[in-house]
Length: 282
Ligand code: SF4
Image 1: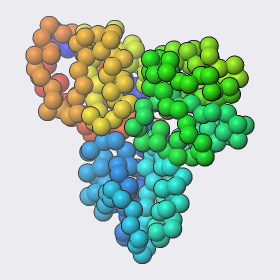
Image 2: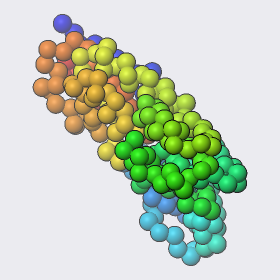
Image 3: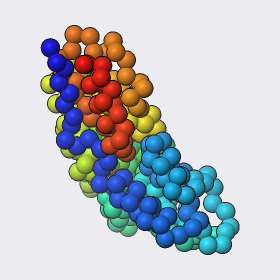
């Protein structure tokens, strides 16, 4: 019996990643010395493609004459932004508008004298960028367990935002914990629309197919999250970076395979995975 391959409608770049790539490519067409601080998006194939067009990745900012710095999709702390300007970079801001919106909401709630709580991963670039918009120290809460350790006695008035790619269910549980302890709480659900659509689809794929495959870089937190959601629903879920990672034994006794991708996975990588699966199924 032929194995059916079902690709999620939302597979491929999210709006913010696609936009950041387009901005970077347009910038390299116009300017000579283009730099990106760290990875513009979390995918090695995309970075390699960018480097081929002449963009150079840098780890630290340096004094320079005439270099152009493209700001990554996940944004930067305000202090790094200002430092780059002072050092002479021409800034091209490719921060996703949905991330910019989170910055705005966090700053506005801080002006209302609220302690800012970010539901998200402490070390993620986006969370660092959000924290870096604020004058006061924000709390970052990745789990319900961590929420229990917040110093609630000192938090009378709080404002909560969520990292754009968080798992909605996990965020809801954390919020419940916080709202049971803080009397004056303002909250914005800042999980972005592309993430919600991907998460909704990834909840169906593992149940509707014998095997689920999530494609994306190991550096991509949103890919990890999609994989974790799918794995809970179907133990025959696999996370692959490229077609090379596929193992023929995964297809034993299988009649359908469901596929989704992280927000920064190029379509070319997905097509290679699909082609490899078709070849193994033939
Ligand atoms: S995941 Fe959402 S917020 Fe992040 S870059 Fe993509 S569209 Fe923007």
